[in-house]
Image (cartoon, rainbow, N blue to C red):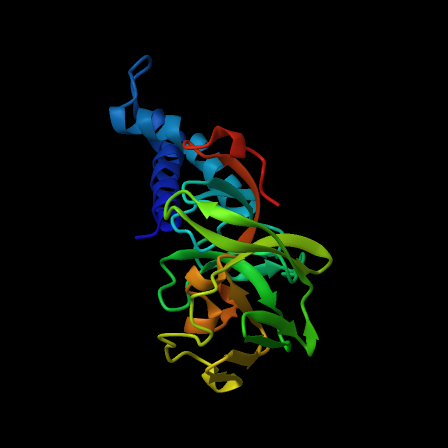
Length: 262
């Protein structure tokens, strides 16, 4: 059971007990009699759960980064905040869009439900929008026939793996972000899986080229050679979007990372 569903059920149960007590049980108790413990707890927790549910469903939701696929932008152990309304107001749990507010842009770091298992949340960078022709060949990204600007900066030392990777500044939608590329990693995409609209992609020994279907997005990790993303398991439907990542609020291993996300 997802946490969102658990929170909704808890909200419904405590709310039902609170309403039942207000409408009927309280009137049947003797004057001065204490509330039963289950009524007292429900009445106390209901407003707290309601506030948490509304904030988490429509405003911001916290996430913890579990893997290194977005290094160096996001590190393992980063706690981040995700804007839940940046891409539209969505019905909690069902995730159906109620109101159009905005749409993902190239370069956004987005949290979404993993297409192969929607109970899992993934985080990657938006690279391709609906209708885009995305090519990643010889470790260079091209969108709609134009090479994405990229310039090399100092190498990155991974503290977990104790090895250096080549680091670049890549520019999407006019905004720079860092990516890592390993020279000894293969050019081709290994272990490609069967996925919806896989016919929109062409793979060869130098990489791949995909045309993004309507209502879908092409996602890639910033740690390009250590990321399982749209190159492997396909496109992300609009219905799987959770929100836009925008802020690091904690990393217990590096307190200096507060607010460092860009």
